[in-house]
Amino acid sequence: MAITQIAPGIHYVGVNDRTTTRFEGLWSLPQGVSYNAYLVVGEKVALIDTVEEAFGSRLEANIREIIGDRKVDYLVVNHMEPDHSSSITALRRIYPDLQIVANAKALQMIEGFYGLCGNTVEVKEGDTLDLGGKSLSFRMIPMVHWPETMVSWCPEEQALFSGDAFGCFGALDGGITDSEVDPERYWDEMRRYYAAIVGKYGAPVQKALQKLAGLEIRSICPTHGPVWQEQIGRVVDLYDRMSRYEGEPGVVIAYASMYGNTEQLAERIARELAAEGVRNIRIYNLSYADPSVVLRDIFCFDTLLVGGPTYNAGLFPPVAELLDKLAARCIPQRRFGWFGSFTWAGASVKLLGEFAQKMKWETLGAPVEMKQGFSPKMYDSCRALAHDVAEKFHGKA
Image (tube, rainbow, N blue to C red; front, side, top):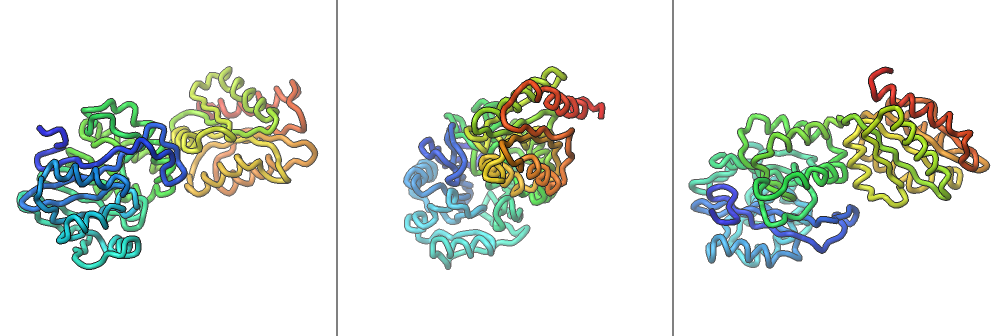
């Protein structure tokens, strides 16, 4: 088997990016990212998605390694985000007769982004493209995570080309499929990717999962991360749980502190939780923590404690920024506790409580509010909050 072959007639032609430091200009990439594209070769050749344009020459070389001077007949565009579509213009120059296959919304975006129209094939739900010996059918999964998103299905090889769905951060270190790499390193990167990129769209993800449930899938071919073959059940289960916003038992303590006093509240609450038998605790200083890692663990665990000082009669900015990210992702349920501090006029505890009401989250215990510096007189209130969290955690409340 050729080193790029995923299934008979299906080849990986994607690239790795180990230089970009911020995905979408926002999210850290400590392990890089892959931009995945695929060739489906029958009597005719279809390329499914492209790569970020800085890597376009590598994409061309990868295509030619598989098919030589044969032409690419079709370009199937599952998703229009530029990390997957920005090589379209170059491909049209290389293959002038290339027909672009996409749904109506994607075709409009192709014209809007790249000024390309004509020589296109518009597809709708259930339409099929016959390649001769291979075929592709199309299913629309809007808002996973753009409105034009669709997936392509090759029934002959039971391969699903899923766009950004089931993708993850992390470049591919040699292997392409999950049998050729260590899949363990990708699970946290999948959670982080989901929380940062897809997290708002739980309901559309659920609809997509229901639509695809009847397919007997042998390969999931996403636009980022490994091709999933051996771990398909785990991948689908992870997406199912995250899109239902199910949290595993665990506590995230996310705080920010100007001079260390609120930090001591966070540390004391965490110590009291541990004394109560809570083991899954993650603590993040929001002034320094990677936001995507914080979001990942908030999606992962069912309980969140947030704390911060009052600042200019409002929330300390790193805390406010976290709350904005949580509200934008419309997380419908979490257990929530909060704590804060002030010097002369308290606001943070009040505003954190209002946030909990806005999100309609289950609140835990009495919030801890501290005036001025941390001292042993705060121990009892920290212990009381931790006790209430632990009681719920252990199912006693």
